[in-house]
Length: 157
Image 1 (cartoon, rainbow, N blue to C red):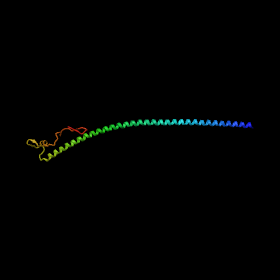
Image 2: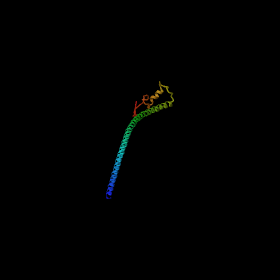
Image 3: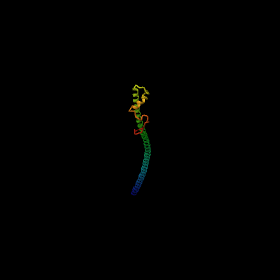
């Protein structure tokens, strides 16, 4: 019996060492599988990160183009605005000059209408209206000259 118990202990050791070996192989296989899974997960993560970076770069290029387009439009609009402002200044200056001329002409008309002498009547060989025009000191000498104004508001005759 001694020998049979020795054989059975050897068999149990063989079975035990066999199961340890199998267990070790299973653990190694799981470890390899986990490593492969981790590598694949890391690869997917790097790919997502690269795609995100590429998307951000494409968006940056698009936004820069859009920004340049907006700046160009803004510069054109600003230049147009400056031109309109300059034209408005000229028109305001011309309006002021025309208003002054109209006021002067209205004053002349009021003076002529208030005098009881009909317009164009001859008085001692000259027409009264001509004499009235020549004797009025506030009639500007440039009354029939064209109006020219520049953007800075200075008049030129």
